[in-house]
Image 1 (tube, chains in turn red, purple):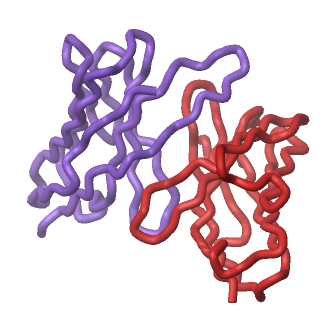
Image 2 (image 1 turned 135 degrees about the vertical axis):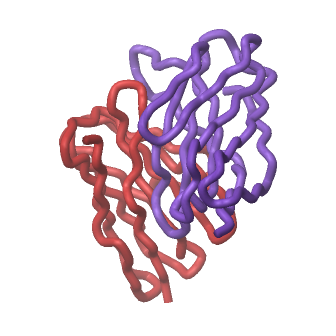
Image 3 (image 1 turned 90 degrees about the vertical axis):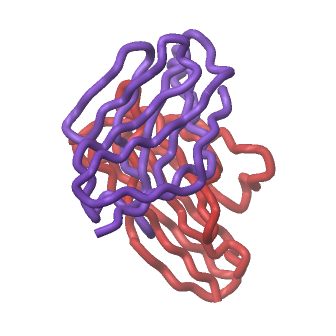
Length: 113
Length: 114
């Protein structure tokens, strides 16, 4: 149990385009989901926390207008990177909370050319 | 949340027990200790968590000292697939809103040697 999926697993896009990443909790409902970013050889950094049906809470330094988060259902959260630039290239990982524990998705590798 | 300190790297022979230490000397009385691991280019995998008592599941055992200032994750029979970065994280209990975050440090890079 407690499986979280992400789609796509990797994406390459041109600078200036927008990219949407989906995060799904497959076998449980998640009121709260989290989005992380990981640059090479670094640890995971929390970007934002989203609660179903309400606005996401962003960490300091994360632009909410650039990283749009939607958590419209108890099993789906989406992260849209708008007007992506090469510096947005990273490994994006979501997690979903079940009871007292966060379970993570497999990650999405974004490369912006 | 309390900060944790872990050794940056460790080696362990295949088939032996891997013991990964974690210091969390500023932990508060109601904060939990969580362990995750991240295999290269994958999302973190939950391993185990505990509050005061020692815990065991199919993956590992968690030993928390009586004063709760440190803990040890034990992988009883390490295999090559256990090579990963292991993160020890201290987290506050969930409030009614339930947004308590996991803050990842740099972890311990465990290498299992054949």
